[in-house]
Image (cartoon, rainbow, N blue to C red; front, side, top):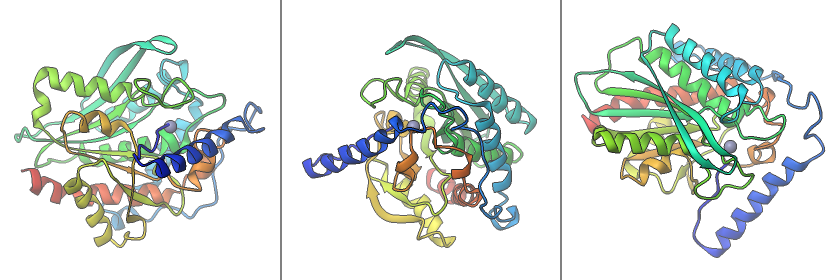
Length: 326
Ligand SMILES: [Zn+2]
């Protein structure tokens, strides 16, 4: 969960209304009903062929989401998240990726000390300048919440991106990061109860001195719904957002990656706060907000075409990003 962090009173009111609308549903009658969160595929058309989306296979990404949903709820510290970790790591290794499992503890969450794990794929290059793509893979701690869109969709996209990028030589060092503990343990999002994984990694990189090599972070989150709207996140780094959004426009996705803005706190915030250029690709609009953080965030909300579009934009924007940071 994340809040709009707009500063004006009017916007704050809108934010509160959005928040209440979204959370009101979490207490709806479908919650707690056995089977309410059962995985269910929708009747969306298949993803476009990978040779039309820069090699990114939306069908493969969708299958990852399906597998993650089948695991069931996997909030930070739960039994389920260990199965999600095993799945992600096993897939990454099958792609030939080098995987660094970064275990850590969040010592003072609202539920006490929680063991967490960031999963970091490091794709080396002779150029130390680094680009990072990231997603969170934990799901919100709610009954019957499987997070097909919130947690699953972006993890599926990142896994498919790993299959492509680990198999080739890249002009810069690339890291693909699967963050644990993005979600707040409490029902409401309030500092410091959220983004445990990204705060941990940013702190580690600052401590080791490697943070100075990190030139761009592209975060994806909630990238699975049909007819998505990705607004420019206003706290993000403008030049980096420009590269992603202009690539999308060039590929014909200008009605999806729109010029409107919103303000969202997410894992990219942990890096922005340390002056790392970062941006967030996220659909945080209606109708997503009607099922966000409810047991209705199920597989039937995931459109393989949206996963493919997201992946296509990420892979197609890489050359310009590489040129920019050299
Ligand atoms: Zn969430």
